[in-house]
Image 1 (spheres, one colour):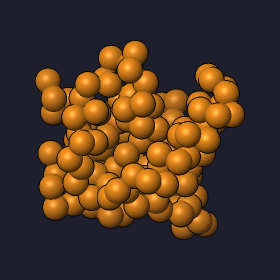
Image 2: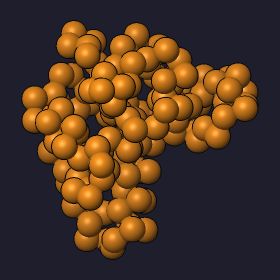
Image 3: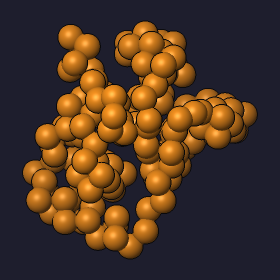
Image 4: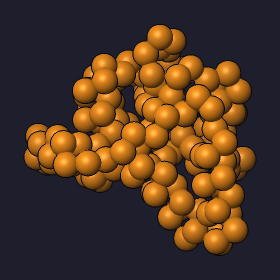
Length: 138
């Protein structure tokens, strides 16, 4: 697992960390206990908030946001025109995959920043060659 390079955190890792019924909960609980520098995007935060809002209620969704705000050393990258354009290129390159814009922006960010490790349960996020921590844990 990368220790000097940021690890990208996807929505699925944040959900697994919070949701004790998730099969990856023990792994992400351990990883988040002593994290390396982490990066995610505003799209991941929005996607996680929406997940908790739909699955539970407004209170849990706001608790999720509070957790993100308190989470160190997590950096949240903004998504602007360059990231959206880069993600569009990747969506076209991987048009045979069911990638969301959130996934594609994550792939683009990992590629641009040279991120070597991805905290996700979504196999699509390994398309760019980044190592998924769920594969490292096996």
